[in-house]
Image (tube, rainbow, N blue to C red):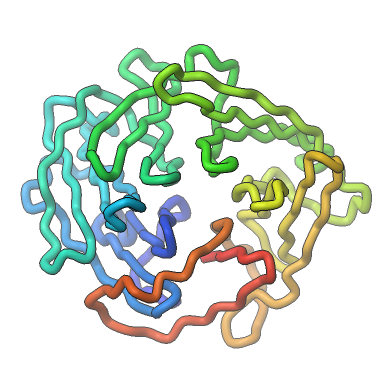
Length: 302
């Protein structure tokens, strides 16, 4: 996929087969695309956007089968409860933003994921605690879960067997293996109950240098935790950790690039577990040629 606009390295949101680039060209352009059909569209901005800086996220409601974009206005990166935010429903003809209110003030982060119709993203609460904002895509209701009871600083969010999971990585002194992986699984949103898991990952071959660049992409249906070297160059590796067997498998992607040529410089990678093709959702769009290569584990990258 080729875009003429500059792309931020923290710009990609995925939900149920669609990819959302939410801050191309200095926070001025937002693009939604369907990699299965090769379609994309530039989304309009809210007409009465009150602040320059904003955060926006893509969510999917599996009941009504609707995609929605949540647009949070911020002033000095704070999303206040007394200003208007916006919601956009895709696939309903003309794209129109609707005003929406958030009942609490918070500082949104880019880390986000949509699981079973709930959009989660990291934030700072008004009391300066780390927090998770839960946005029900269907009802369009917000909930704030503060993390003051957890001894953690979450660097990523993943889907762990249908539940929200926050992850943290602690590297060896040289930025590689052995790697300490901690996971906090949100068992009950209303009761704010969490379960903690801790693992030590060891690369017995000691051939791969990750240099502090790993990110957790998610968990496969068979229970393997998938890690990706998100800032890398050739060779490019994906890691599969099996907690039950305490084994780590590294898989080299031998061909990764455009027109059959591997990248000679470093590049950024976002990885998504269990990509589901959506051939029914059509975007009124300009069509372009797209190159895709699928791994047998169904790992979609952009």
